[in-house]
Amino acid sequence: MAQHLLVAADRYNLQKLKLMCEDKLQNHIRASSVITILVLAEKHACLSLKRACFEFFSSSTDLSLADIETGDFEYLAVTCPTVTNELNSIISKRE
Image (cartoon, rainbow, N blue to C red; front, top):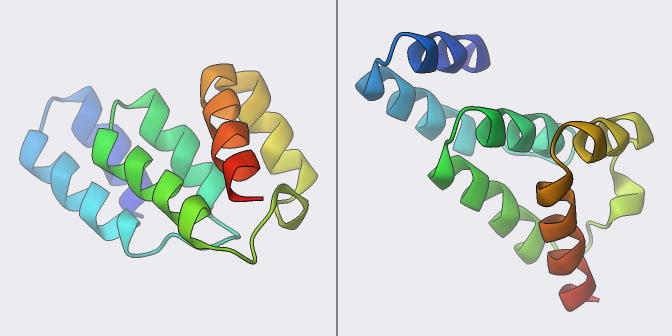
């Protein structure tokens, strides 16, 4: 629900609601949701949310690209290639 509200808040320039949604989503970043949230953050210029996703990858020592569903990573690569490059850099530094 917070994802849909964030999209609407961005569309209608409701900055306070957008920040509230970002905050809510930051608290729900998991291996199963991080790619979806990262794409959302990139598409809607949510810098703090994007940073939180990258921090999740940086701090999760057990998490690798192999843990991410192939379809999710392919979607990220197609929709946000620069983010994919940043993510690869973060993960390679960690390994």
